[in-house]
Length: 407
Image 1: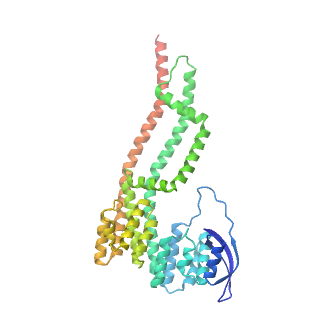
Image 2: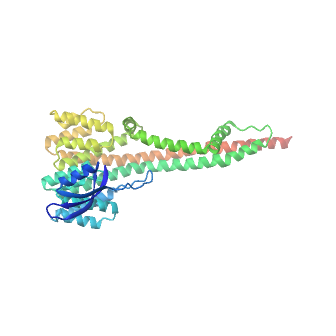
Image 3: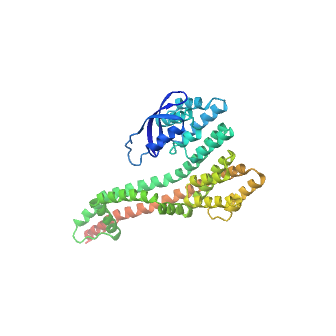
Protein backbone atom coordinates (compact mmCIF):
# COMPACT_ATOMS: atom_id res chain seq x y z
CA UNK A 1 0.00 0.00 0.00
CA UNK A 2 1.22 3.51 -0.88
CA UNK A 3 0.07 6.92 0.27
CA UNK A 4 -1.38 9.29 -2.35
CA UNK A 5 -2.04 13.02 -2.00
CA UNK A 6 -5.17 14.01 -3.88
CA UNK A 7 -7.27 17.03 -4.76
CA UNK A 8 -10.88 16.27 -5.65
CA UNK A 9 -14.25 17.98 -5.98
CA UNK A 10 -17.38 16.78 -4.21
CA UNK A 11 -20.00 16.32 -6.93
CA UNK A 12 -22.87 17.12 -4.55
CA UNK A 13 -21.57 20.21 -2.75
CA UNK A 14 -19.04 21.34 -5.38
CA UNK A 15 -16.55 21.62 -2.51
CA UNK A 16 -12.82 21.05 -3.14
CA UNK A 17 -11.16 18.45 -0.88
CA UNK A 18 -7.42 18.02 -0.35
CA UNK A 19 -6.32 14.98 1.66
CA UNK A 20 -4.45 11.67 1.54
CA UNK A 21 -5.47 8.06 1.00
CA UNK A 22 -3.79 4.66 0.81
CA UNK A 23 -4.00 2.46 -2.28
CA UNK A 24 -1.96 -0.10 -4.23
CA UNK A 25 -1.43 2.22 -7.20
CA UNK A 26 -2.70 5.43 -8.79
CA UNK A 27 -5.57 3.72 -10.62
CA UNK A 28 -6.79 2.18 -7.38
CA UNK A 29 -6.58 5.60 -5.70
CA UNK A 30 -8.67 7.18 -8.46
CA UNK A 31 -11.24 4.38 -8.17
CA UNK A 32 -11.53 4.97 -4.42
CA UNK A 33 -12.27 8.63 -5.05
CA UNK A 34 -14.89 7.98 -7.73
CA UNK A 35 -16.54 5.34 -5.52
CA UNK A 36 -16.91 8.04 -2.85
CA UNK A 37 -18.64 10.35 -5.32
CA UNK A 38 -15.62 12.60 -5.80
CA UNK A 39 -14.23 13.99 -9.04
CA UNK A 40 -10.42 13.60 -8.99
CA UNK A 41 -8.48 16.72 -9.97
CA UNK A 42 -4.97 15.49 -9.15
CA UNK A 43 -3.64 12.30 -7.57
CA UNK A 44 0.07 12.05 -6.78
CA UNK A 45 2.09 9.47 -4.88
CA UNK A 46 3.48 10.90 -1.68
CA UNK A 47 7.28 10.92 -1.55
CA UNK A 48 8.67 8.16 0.61
CA UNK A 49 10.44 9.50 3.67
CA UNK A 50 13.79 8.10 4.75
CA UNK A 51 13.60 6.16 8.00
CA UNK A 52 16.47 4.79 10.03
CA UNK A 53 16.56 0.97 10.32
CA UNK A 54 14.63 -0.52 13.27
CA UNK A 55 13.10 2.90 14.08
CA UNK A 56 9.38 2.96 13.32
CA UNK A 57 6.76 5.69 13.34
CA UNK A 58 3.74 3.63 14.32
CA UNK A 59 0.81 5.19 16.11
CA UNK A 60 0.93 4.22 19.77
CA UNK A 61 -1.78 2.07 21.33
CA UNK A 62 -2.39 4.86 23.85
CA UNK A 63 -3.28 7.30 21.07
CA UNK A 64 -5.75 4.84 19.55
CA UNK A 65 -7.35 4.14 22.94
CA UNK A 66 -7.84 7.88 23.57
CA UNK A 67 -9.25 8.26 20.03
CA UNK A 68 -11.76 5.44 20.62
CA UNK A 69 -12.87 6.70 24.04
CA UNK A 70 -13.28 10.30 22.90
CA UNK A 71 -15.32 9.27 19.88
CA UNK A 72 -17.43 6.96 22.04
CA UNK A 73 -18.19 9.73 24.52
CA UNK A 74 -19.08 12.26 21.81
CA UNK A 75 -21.19 9.73 19.90
CA UNK A 76 -23.04 8.74 23.07
CA UNK A 77 -23.76 12.44 23.67
CA UNK A 78 -25.43 12.66 20.27
CA UNK A 79 -22.70 14.66 18.51
CA UNK A 80 -22.62 13.93 14.73
CA UNK A 81 -19.74 11.69 13.60
CA UNK A 82 -18.04 14.28 11.37
CA UNK A 83 -18.17 16.90 14.13
CA UNK A 84 -16.80 14.34 16.59
CA UNK A 85 -13.91 13.49 14.26
CA UNK A 86 -13.03 17.17 13.81
CA UNK A 87 -13.08 17.62 17.60
CA UNK A 88 -10.86 14.58 18.23
CA UNK A 89 -8.42 15.66 15.49
CA UNK A 90 -8.05 19.07 17.13
CA UNK A 91 -7.23 17.41 20.46
CA UNK A 92 -4.73 14.89 19.06
CA UNK A 93 -1.08 15.71 19.83
CA UNK A 94 0.51 13.18 17.46
CA UNK A 95 0.96 14.98 14.13
CA UNK A 96 0.87 11.83 11.98
CA UNK A 97 -2.22 10.47 13.71
CA UNK A 98 -3.89 13.86 13.37
CA UNK A 99 -3.33 13.75 9.59
CA UNK A 100 -4.85 10.27 9.45
CA UNK A 101 -7.93 11.38 11.40
CA UNK A 102 -8.32 14.35 9.04
CA UNK A 103 -8.13 11.97 6.04
CA UNK A 104 -10.72 9.69 7.65
CA UNK A 105 -12.95 12.72 8.26
CA UNK A 106 -12.64 13.79 4.61
CA UNK A 107 -13.59 10.30 3.45
CA UNK A 108 -16.67 10.25 5.70
CA UNK A 109 -17.68 13.72 4.49
CA UNK A 110 -17.36 12.41 0.93
CA UNK A 111 -19.86 9.63 1.54
CA UNK A 112 -17.78 6.70 2.78
CA UNK A 113 -18.88 4.81 5.86
CA UNK A 114 -16.72 5.24 8.94
CA UNK A 115 -15.53 1.63 8.65
CA UNK A 116 -14.55 2.08 5.00
CA UNK A 117 -12.63 5.26 5.85
CA UNK A 118 -10.75 3.46 8.64
CA UNK A 119 -10.03 0.44 6.40
CA UNK A 120 -8.05 2.74 4.09
CA UNK A 121 -5.40 2.92 6.86
CA UNK A 122 -4.68 -0.76 7.68
CA UNK A 123 -1.35 0.08 9.35
CA UNK A 124 -3.24 2.01 12.03
CA UNK A 125 -6.70 0.44 12.22
CA UNK A 126 -6.53 -3.35 12.08
CA UNK A 127 -9.23 -5.75 10.97
CA UNK A 128 -10.68 -6.06 14.48
CA UNK A 129 -11.10 -2.31 14.71
CA UNK A 130 -12.79 -2.05 11.31
CA UNK A 131 -15.07 -5.06 11.98
CA UNK A 132 -16.29 -3.62 15.29
CA UNK A 133 -16.90 -0.18 13.82
CA UNK A 134 -18.81 -1.72 10.88
CA UNK A 135 -20.95 -3.74 13.31
CA UNK A 136 -21.60 -0.63 15.40
CA UNK A 137 -22.63 1.41 12.37
CA UNK A 138 -24.97 -1.32 11.16
CA UNK A 139 -26.64 -1.82 14.55
CA UNK A 140 -26.67 1.85 15.54
CA UNK A 141 -24.42 1.20 18.55
CA UNK A 142 -21.21 2.85 17.37
CA UNK A 143 -20.56 4.39 20.80
CA UNK A 144 -20.70 0.95 22.45
CA UNK A 145 -18.46 -0.60 19.79
CA UNK A 146 -15.85 2.13 20.27
CA UNK A 147 -15.99 1.66 24.05
CA UNK A 148 -15.48 -2.10 23.61
CA UNK A 149 -12.56 -1.39 21.29
CA UNK A 150 -10.86 0.84 23.84
CA UNK A 151 -11.33 -1.76 26.57
CA UNK A 152 -10.03 -4.58 24.36
CA UNK A 153 -6.97 -2.53 23.35
CA UNK A 154 -6.22 -1.66 26.98
CA UNK A 155 -6.45 -5.29 28.10
CA UNK A 156 -4.25 -6.52 25.26
CA UNK A 157 -1.68 -3.77 25.88
CA UNK A 158 -1.54 -4.60 29.61
CA UNK A 159 -0.88 -8.28 28.93
CA UNK A 160 1.77 -7.63 26.27
CA UNK A 161 3.47 -5.06 28.50
CA UNK A 162 3.57 -7.54 31.39
CA UNK A 163 5.10 -10.28 29.22
CA UNK A 164 7.73 -7.93 27.77
CA UNK A 165 8.50 -6.57 31.22
CA UNK A 166 9.29 -10.07 32.45
CA UNK A 167 11.89 -10.41 29.68
CA UNK A 168 13.62 -7.07 30.31
CA UNK A 169 15.51 -7.96 33.51
CA UNK A 170 17.26 -11.10 32.15
CA UNK A 171 18.14 -9.26 28.94
CA UNK A 172 19.71 -6.31 30.80
CA UNK A 173 21.71 -8.64 33.06
CA UNK A 174 23.02 -10.61 30.08
CA UNK A 175 23.99 -7.44 28.19
CA UNK A 176 25.86 -6.03 31.21
CA UNK A 177 27.55 -9.38 31.74
CA UNK A 178 28.62 -9.53 28.10
CA UNK A 179 30.00 -5.98 28.30
CA UNK A 180 32.00 -6.69 31.50
CA UNK A 181 33.29 -10.00 30.14
CA UNK A 182 34.39 -8.36 26.89
CA UNK A 183 36.17 -5.60 28.81
CA UNK A 184 38.06 -8.15 30.94
CA UNK A 185 39.11 -10.20 27.93
CA UNK A 186 40.39 -7.29 25.84
CA UNK A 187 42.15 -5.33 28.62
CA UNK A 188 43.07 -7.47 31.64
CA UNK A 189 43.89 -10.85 30.09
CA UNK A 190 46.38 -9.47 27.51
CA UNK A 191 48.33 -7.89 30.39
CA UNK A 192 48.49 -11.25 32.17
CA UNK A 193 49.74 -12.89 28.99
CA UNK A 194 52.40 -10.17 28.53
CA UNK A 195 53.59 -10.79 32.09
CA UNK A 196 53.90 -14.54 31.44
CA UNK A 197 55.65 -14.02 28.13
CA UNK A 198 58.34 -12.01 29.93
CA UNK A 199 59.14 -15.00 32.20
CA UNK A 200 61.08 -17.83 30.49
CA UNK A 201 59.43 -21.23 30.86
CA UNK A 202 56.22 -19.86 32.41
CA UNK A 203 53.08 -21.62 31.23
CA UNK A 204 49.55 -20.26 31.42
CA UNK A 205 46.85 -22.39 33.11
CA UNK A 206 44.40 -24.14 30.75
CA UNK A 207 41.43 -21.93 31.64
CA UNK A 208 43.48 -18.79 30.95
CA UNK A 209 44.74 -20.23 27.65
CA UNK A 210 41.16 -20.86 26.51
CA UNK A 211 40.05 -17.39 27.57
CA UNK A 212 43.07 -15.86 25.82
CA UNK A 213 42.02 -17.55 22.58
CA UNK A 214 38.68 -15.74 22.77
CA UNK A 215 40.50 -12.56 23.78
CA UNK A 216 42.76 -12.71 20.72
CA UNK A 217 39.75 -13.26 18.47
CA UNK A 218 38.03 -10.19 19.88
CA UNK A 219 41.15 -8.02 19.69
CA UNK A 220 42.33 -8.97 16.21
CA UNK A 221 39.01 -9.84 14.52
CA UNK A 222 36.55 -7.47 16.22
CA UNK A 223 35.46 -6.21 12.81
CA UNK A 224 34.53 -9.75 11.79
CA UNK A 225 32.51 -10.16 15.00
CA UNK A 226 30.58 -6.96 14.19
CA UNK A 227 29.95 -8.10 10.61
CA UNK A 228 28.73 -11.49 11.82
CA UNK A 229 26.46 -9.85 14.41
CA UNK A 230 24.92 -7.49 11.86
CA UNK A 231 24.53 -10.31 9.31
CA UNK A 232 22.93 -12.56 11.93
CA UNK A 233 20.44 -9.85 12.91
CA UNK A 234 19.67 -8.93 9.29
CA UNK A 235 19.22 -12.44 7.92
CA UNK A 236 17.61 -13.60 11.17
CA UNK A 237 14.93 -10.93 10.86
CA UNK A 238 14.34 -11.83 7.21
CA UNK A 239 14.12 -15.53 8.02
CA UNK A 240 11.74 -14.80 10.89
CA UNK A 241 9.29 -13.29 8.36
CA UNK A 242 9.29 -16.35 6.09
CA UNK A 243 6.68 -19.13 6.59
CA UNK A 244 9.28 -21.65 7.91
CA UNK A 245 10.74 -19.02 10.22
CA UNK A 246 7.34 -17.98 11.55
CA UNK A 247 6.32 -21.60 12.11
CA UNK A 248 9.58 -22.43 13.90
CA UNK A 249 9.46 -19.39 16.20
CA UNK A 250 5.78 -19.97 16.97
CA UNK A 251 6.55 -23.60 17.88
CA UNK A 252 9.34 -22.46 20.21
CA UNK A 253 6.95 -20.02 21.90
CA UNK A 254 4.45 -22.79 22.58
CA UNK A 255 6.90 -25.55 23.55
CA UNK A 256 9.81 -23.79 25.26
CA UNK A 257 10.30 -24.61 28.96
CA UNK A 258 9.05 -22.00 31.41
CA UNK A 259 7.73 -19.55 28.78
CA UNK A 260 5.70 -22.06 26.70
CA UNK A 261 2.82 -22.17 29.19
CA UNK A 262 2.93 -18.39 29.50
CA UNK A 263 2.59 -17.85 25.76
CA UNK A 264 -0.18 -20.45 25.55
CA UNK A 265 -2.18 -18.51 28.16
CA UNK A 266 -1.44 -15.28 26.31
CA UNK A 267 -2.92 -16.68 23.08
CA UNK A 268 -5.98 -18.05 24.92
CA UNK A 269 -6.53 -14.66 26.57
CA UNK A 270 -6.13 -12.83 23.26
CA UNK A 271 -8.44 -15.20 21.35
CA UNK A 272 -11.10 -14.98 24.06
CA UNK A 273 -10.90 -11.20 24.45
CA UNK A 274 -11.08 -10.54 20.70
CA UNK A 275 -13.92 -13.04 20.22
CA UNK A 276 -15.88 -11.69 23.20
CA UNK A 277 -15.59 -8.13 21.88
CA UNK A 278 -16.69 -9.08 18.35
CA UNK A 279 -19.54 -11.36 19.47
CA UNK A 280 -20.86 -8.67 21.83
CA UNK A 281 -20.92 -6.24 18.89
CA UNK A 282 -23.05 -8.63 16.85
CA UNK A 283 -20.40 -9.75 14.36
CA UNK A 284 -21.27 -13.16 12.78
CA UNK A 285 -19.38 -16.08 14.37
CA UNK A 286 -17.57 -17.12 11.17
CA UNK A 287 -16.19 -13.63 10.73
CA UNK A 288 -15.32 -13.52 14.44
CA UNK A 289 -13.19 -16.64 14.04
CA UNK A 290 -11.54 -15.46 10.82
CA UNK A 291 -10.67 -12.12 12.42
CA UNK A 292 -9.39 -13.74 15.63
CA UNK A 293 -7.26 -16.16 13.59
CA UNK A 294 -5.47 -13.26 11.90
CA UNK A 295 -5.02 -11.32 15.13
CA UNK A 296 -4.07 -14.00 17.67
CA UNK A 297 -0.33 -13.75 16.92
CA UNK A 298 0.66 -17.41 16.49
CA UNK A 299 0.45 -19.35 13.22
CA UNK A 300 -0.31 -22.70 14.89
CA UNK A 301 -3.13 -21.30 17.04
CA UNK A 302 -4.36 -19.39 13.98
CA UNK A 303 -4.51 -22.64 11.96
CA UNK A 304 -6.48 -24.29 14.76
CA UNK A 305 -8.98 -21.42 14.77
CA UNK A 306 -9.40 -21.63 10.98
CA UNK A 307 -9.98 -25.40 11.23
CA UNK A 308 -12.63 -24.69 13.84
CA UNK A 309 -14.16 -22.07 11.53
CA UNK A 310 -14.46 -24.66 8.73
CA UNK A 311 -16.18 -27.08 11.10
CA UNK A 312 -18.57 -24.38 12.31
CA UNK A 313 -19.48 -23.72 8.65
CA UNK A 314 -20.26 -27.44 8.41
CA UNK A 315 -22.78 -27.24 11.25
CA UNK A 316 -20.71 -28.03 14.35
CA UNK A 317 -20.74 -25.84 17.43
CA UNK A 318 -17.63 -23.85 18.26
CA UNK A 319 -17.03 -25.81 21.47
CA UNK A 320 -17.14 -29.11 19.58
CA UNK A 321 -14.81 -27.76 16.89
CA UNK A 322 -11.98 -26.86 19.30
CA UNK A 323 -12.39 -29.73 21.80
CA UNK A 324 -9.26 -31.89 21.79
CA UNK A 325 -7.19 -29.39 19.82
CA UNK A 326 -3.70 -29.30 21.43
CA UNK A 327 -3.45 -25.55 20.88
CA UNK A 328 -6.48 -24.88 23.07
CA UNK A 329 -6.61 -25.48 26.81
CA UNK A 330 -9.51 -27.55 28.16
CA UNK A 331 -11.07 -24.55 29.88
CA UNK A 332 -11.79 -22.70 26.64
CA UNK A 333 -14.16 -25.24 24.96
CA UNK A 334 -15.82 -25.97 28.32
CA UNK A 335 -16.61 -22.31 28.96
CA UNK A 336 -17.69 -21.78 25.34
CA UNK A 337 -20.05 -24.76 25.64
CA UNK A 338 -21.64 -23.18 28.69
CA UNK A 339 -21.99 -19.90 26.82
CA UNK A 340 -23.57 -21.59 23.79
CA UNK A 341 -26.08 -23.41 25.97
CA UNK A 342 -27.01 -20.33 27.99
CA UNK A 343 -26.97 -17.86 25.10
CA UNK A 344 -24.23 -15.79 26.72
CA UNK A 345 -21.22 -16.67 24.58
CA UNK A 346 -19.72 -13.17 24.79
CA UNK A 347 -19.94 -13.18 28.59
CA UNK A 348 -18.25 -16.58 28.90
CA UNK A 349 -15.48 -15.62 26.48
CA UNK A 350 -14.88 -12.43 28.48
CA UNK A 351 -14.61 -14.50 31.67
CA UNK A 352 -12.08 -16.81 30.00
CA UNK A 353 -10.06 -13.77 28.97
CA UNK A 354 -10.20 -12.34 32.51
CA UNK A 355 -9.11 -15.67 33.97
CA UNK A 356 -6.12 -16.09 31.69
CA UNK A 357 -5.04 -12.47 32.07
CA UNK A 358 -4.90 -13.03 35.85
CA UNK A 359 -3.06 -16.32 35.28
CA UNK A 360 -0.51 -14.53 33.09
CA UNK A 361 0.11 -11.93 35.79
CA UNK A 362 0.57 -14.66 38.41
CA UNK A 363 2.89 -16.72 36.20
CA UNK A 364 5.01 -13.68 35.38
CA UNK A 365 5.57 -13.18 39.12
CA UNK A 366 6.52 -16.86 39.44
CA UNK A 367 8.93 -16.63 36.51
CA UNK A 368 10.47 -13.49 38.00
CA UNK A 369 11.16 -15.27 41.29
CA UNK A 370 12.84 -18.10 39.39
CA UNK A 371 14.73 -15.97 36.87
CA UNK A 372 16.36 -13.62 39.38
CA UNK A 373 18.25 -16.29 41.40
CA UNK A 374 18.96 -18.22 38.17
CA UNK A 375 20.52 -15.12 36.64
CA UNK A 376 22.57 -14.55 39.81
CA UNK A 377 23.90 -18.11 39.56
CA UNK A 378 24.78 -17.65 35.88
CA UNK A 379 26.47 -14.33 36.64
CA UNK A 380 28.39 -15.92 39.51
CA UNK A 381 29.60 -18.85 37.40
CA UNK A 382 30.75 -16.63 34.53
CA UNK A 383 32.39 -14.19 36.94
CA UNK A 384 34.17 -17.10 38.64
CA UNK A 385 35.51 -18.32 35.29
CA UNK A 386 36.78 -14.85 34.33
CA UNK A 387 38.31 -14.20 37.76
CA UNK A 388 39.92 -17.65 37.77
CA UNK A 389 41.41 -17.00 34.32
CA UNK A 390 42.95 -13.77 35.66
CA UNK A 391 43.99 -14.77 39.18
CA UNK A 392 45.28 -18.33 38.65
CA UNK A 393 48.29 -17.17 36.61
CA UNK A 394 49.06 -14.51 39.24
CA UNK A 395 48.91 -17.02 42.11
CA UNK A 396 50.99 -19.43 40.06
CA UNK A 397 53.69 -16.78 39.55
CA UNK A 398 53.55 -15.82 43.23
CA UNK A 399 54.05 -19.48 44.17
CA UNK A 400 57.06 -19.83 41.88
CA UNK A 401 58.54 -16.61 43.21
CA UNK A 402 58.07 -17.79 46.76
CA UNK A 403 59.71 -21.14 46.03
CA UNK A 404 62.63 -19.37 44.34
CA UNK A 405 63.13 -17.13 47.37
CA UNK A 406 63.17 -20.19 49.64
CA UNK A 407 65.99 -21.72 47.73
